Length: 302
Ligand code: SF4
Image (cartoon, rainbow, N blue to C red; front, side):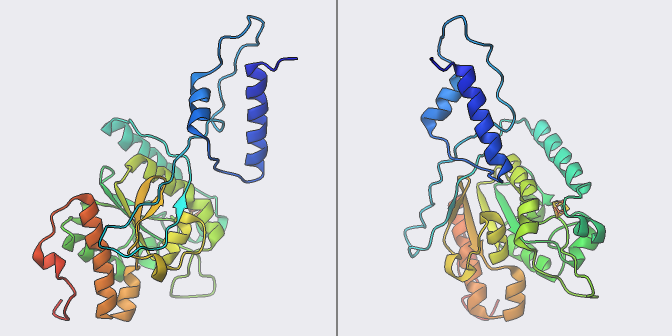
């Protein structure tokens, strides 16, 4: 007996729901399949049942992950790529701002991590220009960020602000966010921060993904190995990948050190490495680079 389009669609939806129940979040769909799904059924005999509209979770888009080649001058580096659906944003400026604001409201009331929700002072959603070509991503808020509700406002944040300004951007013209929106709790501790767990980052990641989809930055700078782990879902040795563009949902990601690492080491070589990463970012953005910028941290004068 011939299988109708609607029967195929029902079977596909059922299969996708089974995958979803098993925790599968993303699937790769070939362009031809995607086109066929978008076009709907071919003309079929009149007896065919009415076609159901695909449910929200059914359409799966393909992001053909192409690892971004490092600039010709850079060494070949390790490459990791992420396949995930990306929402093309054709929103007007107003609609984009409204969508971001609605997302923020949802995050502010989020209770998905009960312990973090109970211990937080503020949800640290993100800050900056939602139309910026540049998105900086850190791992999680610390105590200062938790109390002020803004990412990167402590000592490391002040250093990040200096880095951004030295790149030629006022801080409020880029966007800054963390993988985790709530400060990891530190029961029994009166001071200090802790690294977010992989599960916490997985739970919170959809907020960052939605931010990325709305902002559609030209480049993401991932600050530190934990931010990379949160984005890519696996442990990423920062010393191996830093300085080499990676691909995340078709967006080049520059992994680099977390500013707090610079504060801890104070090593000129490490500062220069981070700065070289930022020079690559500027080059990829097509921004002019002054001689002074190019020579930054080549001597201990800076
Ligand atoms: S960390 Fe993220 S997912 Fe967890 S409660 Fe906070 S906003 Fe919600």
